[in-house]
Image (cartoon, rainbow over all chains, first blue to last red; front, side, top):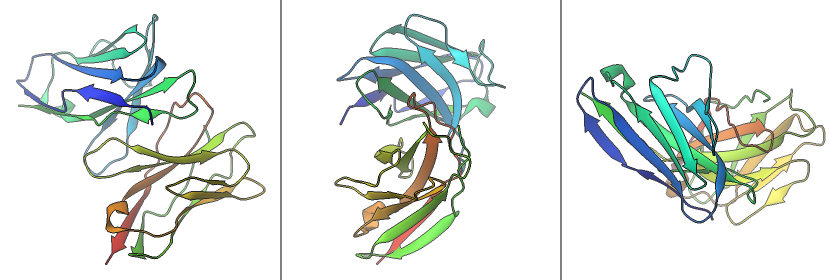
Amino acid sequence: GAVVSQHPSRVICKSGTSVKIECRSLDFQATTMFWYRQFPKQSLMLMATSNEGSKATYEQGVEKDKFLINHASLTLSTLTVTSAHPEDSSFYICSAHGTQNTEAFFGQGTRLTVV
Amino acid sequence: DAKTTQPPSMDCAEGRAANLPCNHSTISGNEYVYWYRQIHSQGPQYIIHGLKNNETNEMASLIITEDRKSSTLILPHATLRDTAVYYCIAEYNFNKFYFGSGTKLNVKP
């Protein structure tokens, strides 16, 4: 099946710094990517929809200035957590959907720890 | 996107069939039923999806009732590696998923 790769898989950063997470579709072009966040023992929560060549659309309650999304090419979307704080520590997961695919494929996730 | 309801947890003996139910009584005519699973600390893994007809692939079977208000995911011969949280999602084809709480399947030896 199609492969979606996230990088890094795990990151620790200091409070107040910014962290960039990459999501790549390796063998298909993804016109749309989605970003999710998952806290321990909870389900995945959709954060935003990343559209190639246009602005991302954010779910209600998600701060667009804190979670910057860039989808500059058909194979790459990035999520930047700006001025990270310990409460931003979470598991961040992306998914990608190509024009030829009827299902979304998920990355392996990025574990962010803010200290 | 239609809301789905799943039991919080289920047990299954290794080698037996695991039948995971899902209710989606408000599903609309053009919403698919998707099943994904998530093994601890990994991204969700696609299992199967369907619209109206029953579907089968190498991983599982999906049985959708005629009125489409519920479905059952069947893992024919569960193994310990099938222990995971299983998510049933009713969604249009653009795959913006709103996950419910899922079913934690415990496969026991």
